[in-house]
Image 1 (cartoon, rainbow, N blue to C red):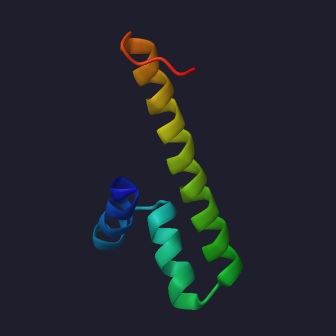
Image 2: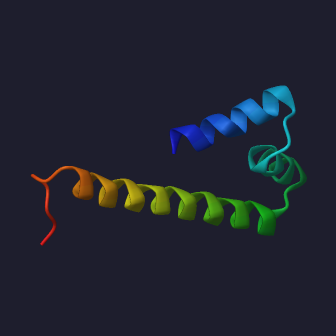
Length: 67
């Protein structure tokens, strides 16, 4: 989550094209459907990455097993 928040700031400062800049533009224009869609996308991305990390951790460390 911190990296995604950092990307919003980084893209805004350096005017890089990306989802963070799109979010800031949508906030300035009060485009609520875009804001909601970007938030859902970012939340889904964080959840998927967390799931992958948990599964990889369980696979690599034999002491951790999910039952």
